Structures are given as C-alpha cells and as structure tokens.
Length: 473
Ligand SMILES: Cc1cc2nc3c(=O)[nH]c(=O)nc-3n(C[C@H](O)[C@H](O)[C@H](O)COP(=O)(O)OP(=O)(O)OC[C@H]3O[C@@H](n4cnc5c(N)ncnc54)[C@H](O)[C@@H]3O)c2cc1C
Image (cartoon, rainbow, N blue to C red):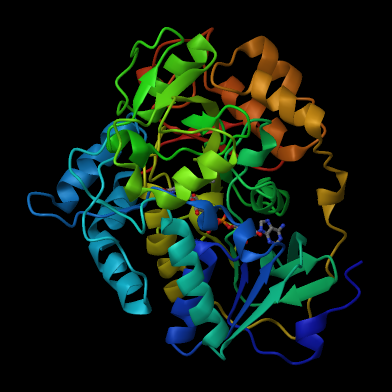
C-alpha cells in the first residue's frame, strides 16, 4: 500500500490534484488549465458513474426578463430555512448568468425556454433536451478535458485517504499508490447511496467527506439530506421535478391530489411518505419534451400515456460536507473541496432545485482560480500513512438502517442506534442529527417537530469532537 509515489518520483509537475470527475472537478480542472496550470484528475469511476451525468432537470440562473439575482437569492434563502450562508448565496446567484455563458461557450447546448421548478418564483432553469442536462454538461466538459494537454486523467483509481505532511495536505493515497500535489481538491460528490432508497449512483458514499474528516478538516451539516419526492418506487430512478413543473400531478391511491406538486421537496416528500407511496400522473404533460426520460420509464415497464406511475421518496442530495470558504478552501491547509462533497453553507437546511449543478460550476471554478496559488511542496515529505477508510463496512444492512433511522423522519432512539454503525459517515450523520434537536428543512425529528430559533446555525464536526453549532455570514 502506498509504496508507489508515482507522480513525484516521475517528476510530474502538478498545480492541482482533483479527486472526482463530476462537473465540479472537471470545471476546476479546466479553470486551472485555462490559466496555464497543470492538473491531475483522479476518479474511481467512469464519467457515467458521477451524479453529474445523471442530473436531469437543469441548472438555475436568473436569465429571463423580470428575473434577477436578487430574486434567485430570495428563493434560495426561503428554501434554506434561515440557514443559508448569505455570502455564499450572493456569490452563487451573482455569478450564475456568467457561468451559463461559460458553459455555452464551451459547447453546452441549452433548450431555448427556461424551466420552472419547485421553490423558484420565476422560470430560471436552463436545461438540455428535457431531462438530459447533466449528461450534456458532463460530456462537453469531459471532451474539453481530454483535449487539454495540461490535464492528465487517471480513471479507475479509487482514492482511499489524504496524504498529510507538516500539518498540510500534500496529496492523496490511492489504491495503486500515493500522488503528491501542493493543492488537492475533493470533488467526490455526495453520500446519497448510503441510504437503501436513493437516486444516486452506487459510488456516492461520501468517501471524500470521510477522508477530509479523518485528516482533520471540519465537516458540517451532515444531518441535512434531501429526499427527492418522486423516484420510481421499484428502482429509485429519478422522475425529475421538471415533470411536475410541466404539469404532472401527484395522486393518492384513490386518484385524488393531496399536495401542491411544486411545494418544497421536503414538504412533498413527507406528504408522500405519510401515504407510503403515490402515483405520478404524466398524462397532463407534453411528454414529447422529455423523450429520454419517458423512454426510460417505458423500459422500466410503465406506460405513462395510459396510467400514472408509482413513486416514492429516495435519498437524493447531501447538503453537508467539507467546510469551505467561498474559494473552496477547507480548514486543512492545501485541501480544497467543491460541489456536493463541500459545505459552503449555500443551501442552508434545504436545497433549491437546480442550485447544485450551479454550485458545482460556480464554486468549482473559484477553487480552480485559487488553489494553484498554494506554495510548492517541501523537498522532504512525511511518508503517506495507511488510509483509515479500510475499516468502513457499508453493506445492504447498513443502508437499510440508514433509511430507517436517518430517513425522512428521525428520532433520538433510532439515531442513537446508528451512532455505532460500522462506517464513519453514517455515524457522523447520526451524531449531527442527534445534536440538532429541532426540525428544520430536510431534517425532521418526530421528537422535536418544530424549528428552534437558537439552532439557526451550522452543525460542525471535527475528528474526535462532538458536534458544535457555528454561525457563518
Ligand atoms: C438522478 C439525479 C438527478 C439530479 N438532477 C439535478 C438537477 O437537475 N439539477 C441540479 O442542480 N442537481 C441535480 N442533481 C444533483 C447534482 O447532480 C449533483 O449535486 C452534482 O452533479 C454533484 O456533482 P459533483 O461534481 O460534486 O459530484 P459527482 O458528479 O457525484 O462526481 C463525483 C466524482 O467523484 C468520484 N469519486 C467519488 N469518490 C471517489 C474516491 N474515493 N476516489 C476517486 N474518485 C471518487 C466519482 O467517481 C465521480 O467521478 C441530481 C442528482 C441525481 C443523482
């Protein structure tokens, strides 16, 4: 293990080492290369193994007449239930239109009309071919990355831990050896696949969050996990919110509507969970707008033209992660994070639909602009240690337990059981959820069902310490 210090012994100069090839990682890599830097991208899976590739609905930005970054900010803050970090929201919404222009310049093709999704007061969701937005962006970025001689991509390499020396992150330890870099960016995505019902790809296990925590970086807000209301009951396949924006109805077993389809996701998800499952009626929708998605529903054995489709909530988005500033810096020198594995505080206690692809491009780019300024590595580095990730055991039983004890409705008894789980991130989720003795946004405690004003703060955990609440501006 870790005997091969490949890139350093070979004298490869790297300004930024990126772990993960979703949209956050690829944007950061392209940004560094654009400014003359050299990048090594390491990823455990193929491109389609990222959540980015599967993103359907779109990417939010104030782009229509009558809309503005201020209105986008106001909607984001309402969704976030008093917990959004205002400086991060400002950066997100102000930079959004320029980042959409960047994507277009790189070759991303957006449909001309903007979509409307739950919680947005205006139509501001840029999307591609109905529900193919993530795929379109990911493939365009991947092509650019492959064409860029300043970026080397190492696919199929799982990173197991961070390499630290002299109080600083100096690279990573991967399955086939250690890789050194003055700056390391975690872009490893979320942890949704820790829950048995999920829309996420199976590799979304929060590994980046675990390695940052183990190396001493602060992580935060792990109790906030968004459950998407409408995943196909049988498989967890996501049926995008854009469908409800286009007129799809939620019906109970008697064929009656029981909720506002465009209410915030946590409200809709709990309304469905209270009934066990629901039916999504796609007959009122112009289905020709969503050709690929409708094909996938048919492949799953349903004909949405004839009958409503059974749906139920599934774990979808990790709001918490590695604590960063607005340029992706964690509190461990040399370590950066961006995208779903990071916690800038921008989403607060509930993410507004289509703000996460935006987060990837805005904060991925900012990390790419900042990280290459790290000082060069010292000549002598401490040897990379044995990664501690090997102790984690994530199996079907644990994923079921996550669904049961840390699902849409939690309580102290279940969360205490989870505190002894055989894997770090599930334990951190449980500890954070136990500490938050209130219900706020996506975190709902049956034993503390109301919001407590004094808990309008971020739940921060550091290695070996109990969660503390911090206020960020
Ligand atoms: C089905 C679905 C639909 C969605 N729809 C939308 C939408 O319409 N709009 C929106 O804004 N958001 C949407 N989201 C959320 C959004 O897609 C994600 O938040 C975003 O794509 C995360 O991007 P990322 O770059 O941070 O991580 P990801 O795209 O998940 O990429 C993570 C990368 O890290 C790699 N990796 C992970 N661990 C390791 C390791 N240990 N070693 C090496 N590599 C590792 C993975 O292989 C992968 O390449 C959706 C999510 C899903 C699952």
